[in-house]
Length: 382
Ligand SMILES: Cc1cc2nc3c(=O)[nH]c(=O)nc-3n(C[C@H](O)[C@H](O)[C@H](O)COP(=O)(O)OP(=O)(O)OC[C@H]3O[C@@H](n4cnc5c(N)ncnc54)[C@H](O)[C@@H]3O)c2cc1C
Image (cartoon, rainbow, N blue to C red):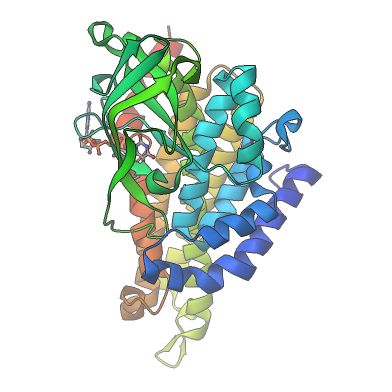
């Protein structure tokens, strides 16, 4: 298929793809069993310059695009959904600093992010505020030129490994979402720690934690953007990162399709490979068609982000929604192609099915994506 990728985009895709084939696919079973974030893999990815993608050249990056980031995430997810999401979430705070940070913040953090020495997290969700992000309770109270943060952030990807976290807190609770502010909180700040590590269904090579803020004093210069703009910053970042979740779902589905095709050619029943049974052929044809449709939508959303198009909200929600629902269906079908063996951990398709599920949930559930799309549809139609 020709996706009209430039030479540079093809190169990025191939770089990630080769790394995934060489390093991640052979390791993924072990990563899954260990239930631990593989630091060594992140170090290797840094050596490959993968973390330079979203960072502008003047801060040590490659000034690449959302499409290149998506191509990279897609390839990583073809190998392992956990590594893909750790990488994708790292891009959220990175994007935050690139898009909303001041010069001092960019100089302070972006070179380390580009080198892969600073890992980031994004702390929006709370125990009582998931879909309803306007309902967050974490408070930031001004004290001199500092802010004192108190609260709990829930289900934070990279929580315990992050060197900095972009935390959304309420500086003026009476103003609701208009009183939210974004802070860069550094690891080691007194009163800031990672809490419980979640025991998850899938993406086991990614760590998910509570982030605890207990009288945590953050300097005023660590405010990202302006006071009162935190909610808008979070929504702006989610418009972009949802494309990454779409790319992640796409990669998982492609990986499952590849495995199903390979298996169908070798498994024999009734004296012939199951690939010659029409029921299997039709299932594979549907899977492949859905993967291609999702790819076109994800790439289109990424291109929309790169063209600075203002109307990103609807297409990024569509890409995330369609690709994640597709990944769930395709991975379930891949398990079906494997029959009983698909249900066993000896083969990777059951892991892909578990890894796919969360793409329908995080960065806004698919119910929320449908609401976002519907709202935009009515807005656009006047
Ligand atoms: C593995 C993992 C990693 C995560 N990583 C991060 C992270 O790095 N940073 C971060 O900030 N968050 C993170 N999250 C949180 C994630 O974004 C939330 O779980 C998600 O937004 C849903 O919120 P919730 O879990 O509180 O569900 P709820 O909001 O309680 O939703 C429960 C159900 O109700 C539905 N629902 C809610 N409101 C409506 C409505 N108005 N109309 C129709 N249906 C509705 C939802 O779709 C869902 O089906 C992560 C979550 C997981 C599972």
